[in-house]
Image 1 (cartoon, one colour):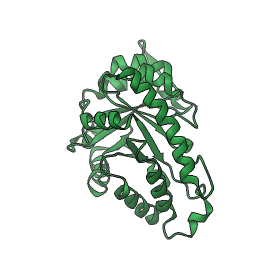
Image 2 (tube, rainbow, N blue to C red):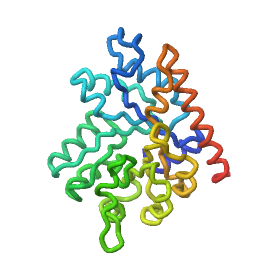
Image 3 (cartoon, rainbow, N blue to C red):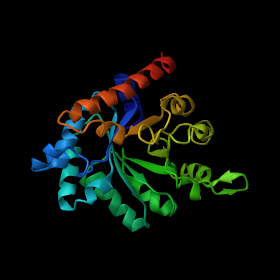
Image 4 (cartoon, rainbow, N blue to C red):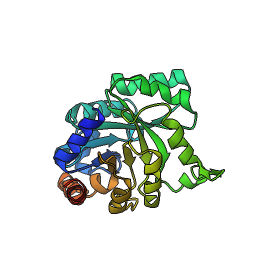
Length: 271
């Protein structure tokens, strides 16, 4: 899916919502555990309940890796079940020397056919470029993350430049805005205006809305560009909105609340 197609989906659905499939076997409703594949059954019902309200799904790979081969099977079945017009993100945060990154890229882009993968930039260009060599696939590079520990390194300052600013600027030498997105956490809404000056054309994957307390209105006000340029993720706030047999209805209601706020914002900015 290219950038123009993603923008079309956003306008058609009046949504730039990404639903994170952080599916924890210990948190799904107990009745699902009698199914042969409870993780996939949970994901399937979440997808059925939210697919008209979101433009992307983001499985967090760790939740599937932790279950061994059964988790990988559930992940592949989930990916196959997601409608083809919805953007898929492997939240894997990979990044290693070139040969290893090349195999990571093949795993997620060829074997499993994800549209994109999150990548850690710490090892530099040769660890990222293998992911950028695949046609019509996206790298979502960690820029300014939403976790508390982002303060430890990302705000290291030298000559009036923060490390995260250098990452954003340097990475644009490696790939275009048609293949490179950035993770920018919603818990730093005051930074979006400044970051848009550094990376004006790229899409941002924005975690931190919902359970982490990010402000959708502020993120949208300062982070949007002329093609929206935002995929705002909510994971726990949607998929664990309910815990009973009607958990999927609760998830839909939570997603609908976010989508309706997004629709209002889009109607204002793209009237």
